[in-house]
Length: 158
Image (cartoon, rainbow, N blue to C red; front, side, top):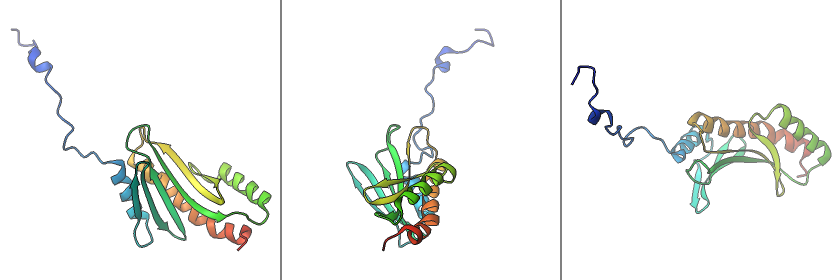
């Protein structure tokens, strides 16, 4: 066999296994981010058929994170209630929230669910990085904490 020939048996050897490499689960990443953000007595977590749900305190707001599973098609949703409805001058409140959605909320947005105004963001897990998970959670927590007291003072009924 010439010196530059490739031994075919070696060229088709199996690649090294991924076992034992630093593969961090989405749950571990979310819990690490929560540990860095939590300003309360620790996060609460529950697990069900619908996935994982965490609640933690950031400044003056409660922040929730829901992970529906750990496949590419599952979703991470992070939200924080900032105001209970009904509110004073709701047309002006809605205009303000839409303006904030356009100019200030980055990947998050203000929305309404039931009788609450929320800051919310959602992302499927396909190609998500730990840095994106951290950014998503930090943006929601920060915007909610920066907004809740001002919204309550200006629009709250209680």
